[in-house]
Length: 274
Length: 251
Ligand SMILES: Nc1ncnc2c1ncn2[C@@H]1O[C@H](COP(=O)(O)OP(=O)(O)O)[C@@H](O)[C@H]1O
Ligand SMILES: [Mg+2]
Image 1 (tube, rainbow over the protein chains, first blue to last red):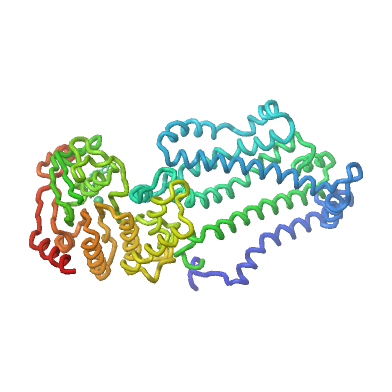
Image 2 (cartoon, rainbow over the protein chains, first blue to last red):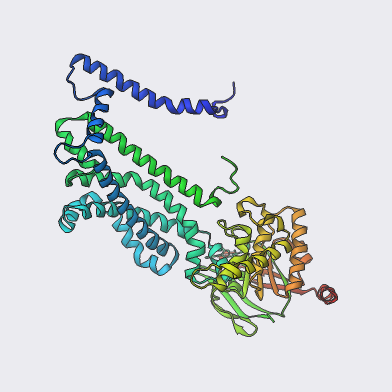
């Protein structure tokens, strides 16, 4: 017997082992649901797949009786719009401030204590402040996402920038580069993929902040809907919504990863084909 | 012209004197090999020449002008590692110097000027033996290839001084010999002044027209940081220099 650390699954094996936990959860759910339904046919806690499909049919493919909208798509568009705006602003801020802090000693001296403190402010604790200052509509939700993820992005990027080998910056100067040229040709191209990675890591927190804000005050949005139907214990809507949010987050993460692989071929240069 | 004079130079870090009483006159076009025990301040001396650090006392003069106190295009450098940009191909690494020179806001050349820079860079890469690898990223190159690339990149701005910090320390013996030939040829062609740190005495004597040995002359056993190193030997290898000059003149 070879040691287990030296034994690798083949292609089919990887698929099988990867699918196993999903199958286990699905089967566990189906069994538990069937048991409860056998007890009480009106059980709401663990609706069967058929009920969930019917619910999705209702919210996604039938116009709402009152407004004539397709609720799930309206919710999706509203949430993605807020999230995209918030993450876009956060990324832009992080790019400017993070690279500034990492590269320019005066900017670092001026901002790093401030950013370090700011990043410790719990964003949810300032949500009431945001509602008071920015009102109950769109702006405050976008601002919560910005407040929630920007400090992390800034600190990560500042650290990565400061970590760049000193030799590279010296080298660029001996080639006659100005500070601006160093930013544009040396720092930015190497930091963009790092920023994209940091962004991938903040997708989770960003959704958390968005859904919390929507749960408290909104008129549409994926988070709003989940908390609205909670009153009727409509698990048949909540569960598909959760799956849908997860899928959206997963796809954005995948797209960002693809973006890095496509736009920065040097990242993988010399690393073989793995 | 690019003669270097160092006058009464001291370099101290907060609790340590690294260099003391360094005086040096190097005529233009010399190849100086800097040797000495590890930790005696060779890299520090190079960083002073580069303008990355400022001396605590004394000064460095390039053609009788005080040295500009930050790195600039008159001084090229090759480090032991991290000398080339990982996100640029060999060709892009080499034209970068031209792009910085020719495009202040974008740092990028376009059209005919880019084609001219690319042609020049391709010729330089050919000269250092990387003609077949112009589109590789540094991570796809061996250590020796990366150092060739670093030298090619440093030469494109035609620096007066070329500073090398143990550039061949990580290379195998065969590659080293190739690199010696390359470096000597480029040095003869460009007529720049070279300072090269090496921990290999033999390498120093093979390449240099002058060997500068750094060491401490005073040692306080209770406080190792009390005294710094200075240049204990300044050996001009005049014969070798004369032979080289005749060779260059004959070309
Ligand atoms: N930035 C620094 N701050 C404090 N001490 C330093 C610094 N850089 C180098 N030194 C010290 O200066 C001495 C000389 O270092 P270095 O010039 O790198 O030696 P060498 O290149 O000859 O091996 C060492 O003792 C090192 O610890
Ligand atoms: Mg050294």
